[in-house]
Image 1 (cartoon, rainbow, N blue to C red):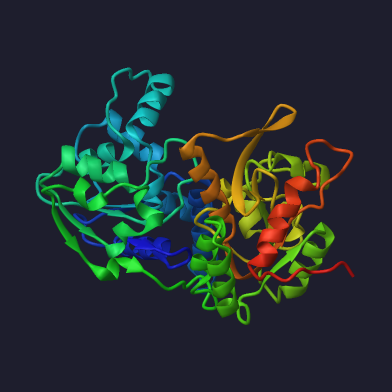
Image 2 (cartoon, rainbow, N blue to C red; image 1 turned 180 degrees about the vertical axis):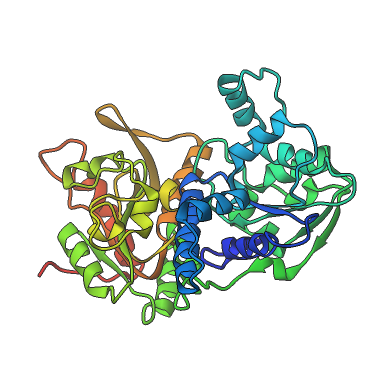
Length: 421
């Protein structure tokens, strides 16, 4: 199942799994994800909800008991993998829903991990191949459901759809495959001919397996297309798309962090949630008080109220792409550093090492950095403000030239500039 950001892929997977927690004993389902913050937030939110709902019916369930129940059907993929390495029997689950399946590890990355961390020297499967092999232990039937976000691979070793299709073609060609029609879209194929990779596998293309409309924000059906044009450097397409969403989904630009904070707080009403996000490579926002290397506690950041300094509401600690992928807020402030900067109308890729910025030349790392900003720009339900620093002439790592091109590019895309009051 593919879908634009916020289209409801995770919700669809959770609905399927929770419906089967009390189903026939032969139809157990499990929701898997390699995204630790997402797993933590989902577990905590569902446990809190069940505890609070039980109070209303005078059947109070302790939060600890609710948490244990939730852990049985929402699992980190690493724990599921370890359990099934130790036990070679078919798992109790007949249905495995793998969220953000495009982020599954390729064979080399997993083999390296298994050698270093588990002492297994000859592991020769990718994460997709291993998961399918575990489910394939069933003699009669089982289902693997992959929830795929296009352009969402953000870290080394994440191989997108290619590893899933290679595993099916080389090891599990007898499986039946149902896929959405999005395989030719640039956000999904990484330059590969995905259809050809499936070879003689029994494949059915089913149009309803692509969720094209955002339910995260009823105002932002074209947000994904706009962000795609921005990170592709397509200024005219971005400007045209922003004109279509501007009236209902505001995106503002500022060079002043205080202005960004004020704007976010002015937009939020009632229980609406605000927060800052930044790239994990945004190391030189630290002089401005935005420290991406200060790890947040995802459950506090996403779920706690305005009176908790650890929550997103305080607009102090930013979430990175690794913290917020698969999750969202109502109003978001994107803090943009010089790791992804516009130079003469083209994106330049950098990482901060030691005392200076270095060029990123590896094509895969360029994709991961592009996707990091794609993730950050699609985390808001209702609107966002983008903060780009002015730079500091006294700091060789933060000259204005590292930031002005990006601000100019986004202005050309149609984003209005908020002025300091």
